[in-house]
Image 1: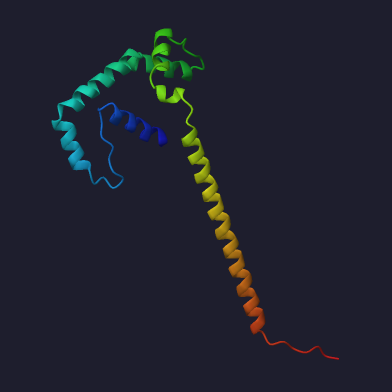
Image 2 (image 1 turned 60 degrees about the vertical axis):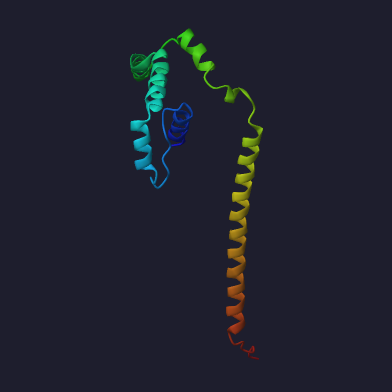
Length: 141
């Protein structure tokens, strides 16, 4: 699922698409924009041409069929070079993103543990109150 959002974001950054809101509140406006703004058509055409330079549908089918047969297609050196030049973002370390991810995970785990310990304490307190309400009987001699 994450790859769909990444692909949508890349299309948006290329000027060839619009990302819809989760509730689709911008669907009508976005559709009008895509249909009536010629820059989207031009950017979409450019993105398609770029994909075709990688071999397009015939290359994709060749790779899929080879994988289905258990073989591998020899990489195209020219395409390999182009693909290594696609996004310089990934050539730089993403320290901030990594630290934010770690902080979010630690926070989520901490909240979960806190909720569990609060629940356990509440259960222990309820059991103690219930025991205190029970009449105590003196031992028989």
